[in-house]
Image (cartoon, rainbow, N blue to C red):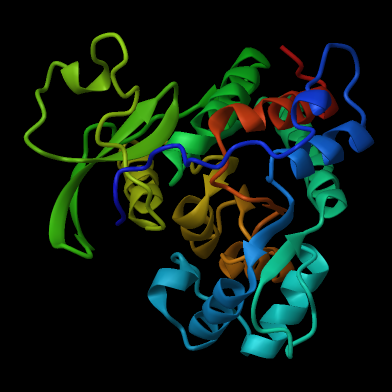
Length: 306
């Protein structure tokens, strides 16, 4: 588990205002320009971190596996080639330091694939579970997707709400609680919070997600899926999320789609092995408002614009 998640201080780059959408159909070129201007794609990755995480994944570091149990060997060089193909980072192993790139065209292409999965799920009236390890930046994206799917006739599950569990953090073992915010699973630090739900909100200017944590753990989705089984419900037709929510679901054979940064190779490995339907490459720590156009584009492409 990680620290409470907060929107980062990253600000949209030059030209961000010019990329704001003013209505009508959102084009792929417009979205790609917006992604670069807001630093959701483009030269946003750090090469040192990409290479370090490839090495750690190759050695089976649980923090990088995100709950995934790869079917094949993924040495660091093979991982780098995969990330070059799926994300756009440099394929040159001799390039060791400096910025690395997320190709906005690859991001847009993956968003189109994500939209196709959402459209198929909506058409079938499927059952969906969604959750995020990035409740600060990405909650709005997932909440909009969950709402659109629900309005399209899907069942959006919120199992195991209030379940308390223990996990290790850098400061030692802590207790956490599985919660749902706008039907999106989030994890909060559990500090004997009141049962009346008062921890969900505060006064003017209060943090809208008090205690919500940034986590890569697969425990939340495992707890949620176990609760569904215990209640006699079938597995969801689709899990939507990031980090351990997606890889934990994939490990259990549940269909999943998600968002991932270039330094989180697990989702791209799962996609390459056919265990995750779509992994979208993007920077997952930009300011929340930067994902607005991206959200509108996905809903547009899925035929679920709000």
